[in-house]
Image 1: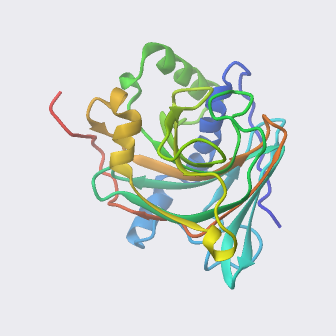
Image 2: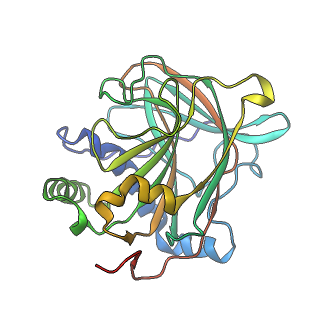
Length: 277
């Protein structure tokens, strides 16, 4: 059976752009630093899907959705003799989030394989009405909020106060989009707290050729996406999320993910800087 949604928390309707971040914060709060440290000791930051039996996702991946939303379905299935994650959006919203605490340096990387079987019709990453997608892989960063513009810092503080959760200050989402060109980088249609980086565009081939492999240097991608506001800081990586939504377009999407592999060192208490202030 797909992952069941947890109890939802309400949030002000005036913050649609922070809704995605709130969902990620809930999962990080459930697991916490203790689990992240245990994963570092085991040399595996993210629990694999390939070792799981068909059915619910491994428990270390936490499902989150939003109030009054249909939940996106996440489940482990067998495909070509291997266990993979099936992600199905049906006029729905949902994230599958895994907590980590990894240092953002030159060694931090993320690798995975994915394929999109059905794109969500009517998506447009540049508009709020079309802000949906069949396949996204997102990374949460804990930038100190004093680096943010006053308006965004205020909205983030209000969101944290209303939910009681440590909402991530920055999120970078890798996207497989139906039409945007590869390497396109743009802010989320609702909030600049989320930046979207298009890695794949349009349909792939058939069968095994429909899978695409990715390997990303997280520091390089972070600096491209958030270097304008980070001021040389390299904030800790605090979570990874697999996401799919079709609630704005009321559409349908279907995608698959292999294991997501993260490499990097456990984070230390202090921030790092690429240059002197």
